[in-house]
Image 1: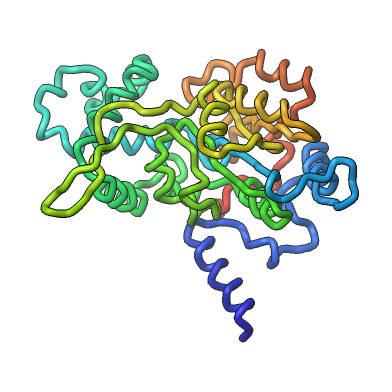
Image 2 (image 1 turned 45 degrees about the vertical axis):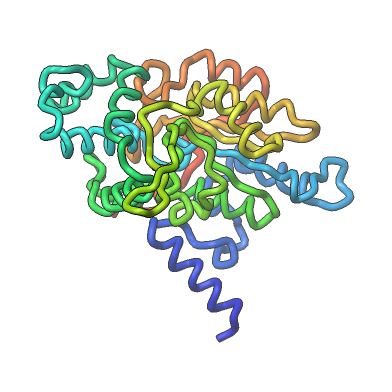
Length: 336
């Protein structure tokens, strides 16, 4: 067995841990086999060919082939609740014995009672309260271990599968296709940066240093005579809406030429990408498949896709993926 073949088999084994699609080298001649032959797929293939063909007027050197992706609802399932929010609720329940006041104090009471509808009414402010209460006061190593342990046991309420199984197969293929063509792929998400870094490399092939997300403050301390970073109950950066464009500038330092999202929170990231100096690709995933996944949009509390966003995408020429019509399969793990 050659070293290259051994390396390829090892990569396949790692990706298989999260139910990811086969790497590009193992796929058929079609680099996006889980995509129907639609206009969106044609646009993607045409874009990649134009920016990677040496001598093309649209050629982009590899170091500038930056592709950014939202995470929740773009790369994996986000209904009925964002995965990290489910983790937060489970953490509230796990440590509630240390906080008897939570039984009557909102939004903790709604989390403990399982009243999701009321919990969502507290919006961003409520989410931040829960996150700061459950994510702080521990070291970054302890937090990472807690997330990894949770991901091994937590299952989606509808699909009864680990959340890491519910990545979107067509998007995994797209990530691999872009990297095979010299792109650098990044996640730019409103989710917690440390929460996402626990699984993005195994699930998407995206290493921790290519993840941009919301972040809390940390403090260097000596803990049991060892240097540690302790998580504080203070928000450092909120990576959603305009924050996504700002986060790209702060943490990546180069403007993307390719970006994919799925909700109103991704609009500014796509607008920032559309301002690139040359050919750009902007895409949105539209959840319109209630049978295989979910159908939601304008009025959803999770992953809202207002009519105005659809109209804007159509007016400026952004590609909108219909999960129902453009994807042959939805999940990397296919329900039998």
